[in-house]
Image 1: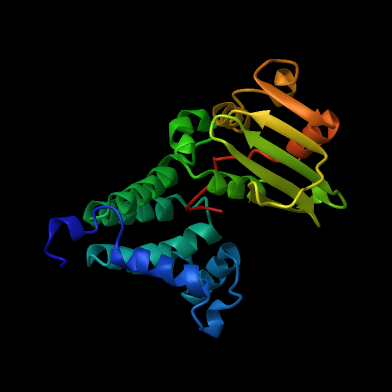
Image 2: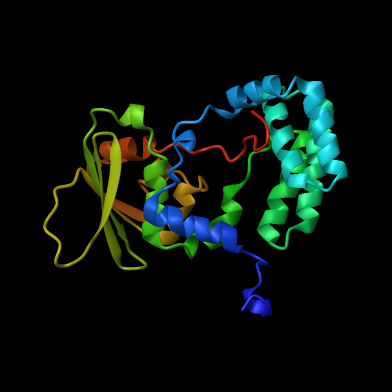
Length: 260
C-alpha cells in the first residue's frame, strides 16, 4: 500500500494521524507517569541546559548532531536552549538550520510548512500583523454548522460569563436550521432544534442568514448595527442578545510557536 502514490504521506502522515486517532478515543496521556504533569517548556529548558553543562555545551552537542545529520536530536537540544534563553542568537540560528533540513526532508506538505515556519520565526520573530480571518469566509461557509458553534463555545470568556444564565435561539433562515444556545455555569452549550424538540424558553431569538452570521462572527458586520435593518429580526430581549454575543472573545491568531 505504501508504494501507491495515493497512499503516500504528502498531506497527512501515518505517525501524525494514528496519534490523532488514538487521542480522539483515549486522550493525550500515553500512560507514562513522567508525561502526566511535566514542567512547562521554559522551566524544563532551564533544567536541561543546566544538566547538560550550560549553553556552550548544548551548542557543542547540537553542532555535532547537525554535522552528523541528526536534525531531530539537534532540534530537541536547541529547543530547550531557546526556551531557556530566547535571546541566544547562535542557538536560534542553528535551530533554524535544523528546521530547514527537517522541512526539506519532510514528505508531508503541512509538516514542511511547520518546520519552515519555525525557522522563519527564529530568524525574524513571529508575525505581529493581525491575520485577516475574513479571507477564510468561503472555507467557514463550508464548515459544518455544529463545528462552528463548537468553536464559539471555546471563545466564551468564562470569567465574564460567571453567574450568568442566558438562552438564545438562532434561526438560520437560508439553510432551515435552528439552534438553541444556552449559557450555564460559565459554559456555552448548543443543540439543534427540530419539530420534535421540546419547547424551550429563551431570552431572545435571532432570525439571520448563515452568510450574514458568518460576517458577524468574522467581524465584517456588527450585530448592533444590523438590529434595525431588514437583514435580520430579533424577538425577545435585544439587550440579552447583545450581552450574549459580547461574551464571545475574538482570539488573536498571532503567537509565538518556537519561543516563549
